[in-house]
Image 1: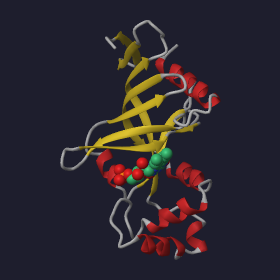
Image 2 (image 1 turned 30 degrees about the vertical axis):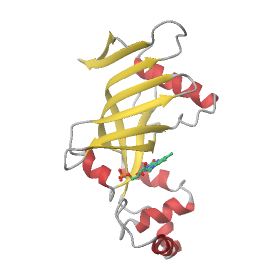
Image 3 (image 1 turned 180 degrees about the vertical axis):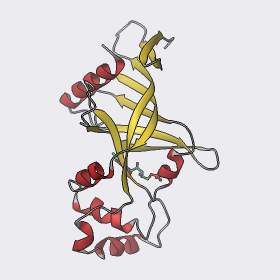
Image 4 (image 1 turned 90 degrees about the horizontal axis):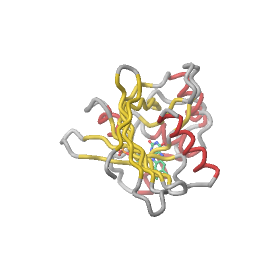
Length: 197
Ligand SMILES: Cc1cc2nc3c(=O)[nH]c(=O)nc-3n(C[C@H](O)[C@H](O)[C@H](O)COP(=O)(O)O)c2cc1C
């Protein structure tokens, strides 16, 4: 099985086991100052009619946030996924491609009320910026009108995660050493290397 198929199989199993990490990842970037920065994001599966056997992976974010600036500071981002219920860690290096805004807008309609309002709050208070107080934040959210909440602002964006390197560490081997394999893309194909765990 190719490593992407295996990845989706592990995620499906984690979902069946109600793994709280099944839908999550940690995306690491490099700041303008050259420092590492990491945060949890939901990993979405998108059916984009690419002809691929597996769905594409994507993240939805707000363009006002520092991470979106950081996405362009290096040629790739590091993505970490640990699925405790199946005892498997994935470390991916991914390039990012903007998701078609039409798809982002459709997905945005499914968001709960407060995240929708937050996307409009970011227009005046960028995500991750300081605000005077929690009360000021609550007021800013409450001030968003029904009209704004009907459609996504342009700052609601999404990125496809395109894995170019993938490492799977399987901790479920009992008394045996862990199974660690790295997959790199060479001339369009995945090439496997077994690593010392
Ligand atoms: C379980 C969980 C899921 C999250 N999902 C997202 C997400 O899908 N998109 C997002 O922008 N932030 C998400 N966040 C918040 C981010 O971790 C982060 O706090 C926020 O995006 C600001 O990051 P930045 O300052 O690096 O831009 C999530 C946090 C948690 C704990």
